[in-house]
Image (tube, rainbow, N blue to C red; front, side, top):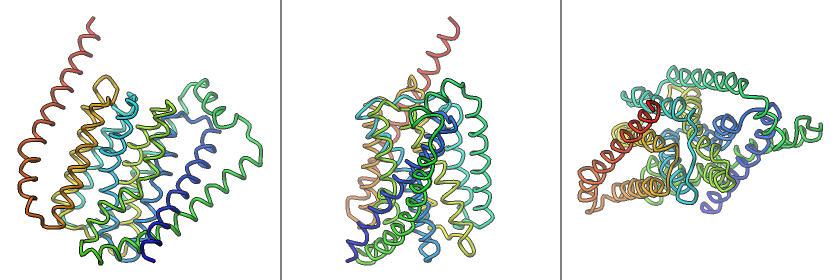
Length: 361
């Protein structure tokens, strides 16, 4: 029965996110919003709605570890797994706006969250600060989208059904949004209840369940959205969806969860010492990869996916207190990570030099 409720909750989350994304994307496109902005806002926030629903349910039920682990784990999963898998299938184009504006913001927010949680507590004041930051970010993106050319606006609006939608189309899309929200509420309740039972049965902490099973499960809408967008050639949406989802997770999901929790959220010491620094490192790794000609190649996608496998393996070995954990940790810390960091720095410097030469000529 627990397995059924867990799987059913996951299915409802995915179906709810799909309905929410489809309805809200079509409504947004009517106003002529550009593809990248839709990827960074409507699609990204819609596909992050399972994380929001699950985290709210978790904090209201007293499972703060699930709420925090869900956000941190989802951000790591989004970059390493989703971008990695998508790039392995189709090399992804990266917009200059992402490189100049949104990826640095994601990096900054990751560091801010670490600073907020150094005392092992995320207060309601800090939560409201994150929410205000999200409102300011959305306002900035909306103003930015209005400066797009009329050609871009009309082209994308027509793709979603024309500039003058019928009243019935508005009604259908609004019903999709409302129905999606309803499915998210029910699905999140079943998923969290099932995850807590799993944690108790397997003898592992709720934070590990949140970082792995729930993080991957609630990120499935991002997986589907990014893969479909990449295969359709809408590669701005594929990458913008991931970056926008991470920004929304940090400011929206974590902000709302800590703001509504009585007394804020208690943060596990292991998350502050290890998992949030991993999230920061993953965010910083985006910049040199994105700088390589504005494309995430298949080789770089394989590297990202490989690191997600390594991270998940570490969590499993650590939870099981396996004898292989010290050797695995040493190999990652002293061999794999330094080589990767050195390679990324080299790639980034080479790309910057190439651009300088091009500009000089």
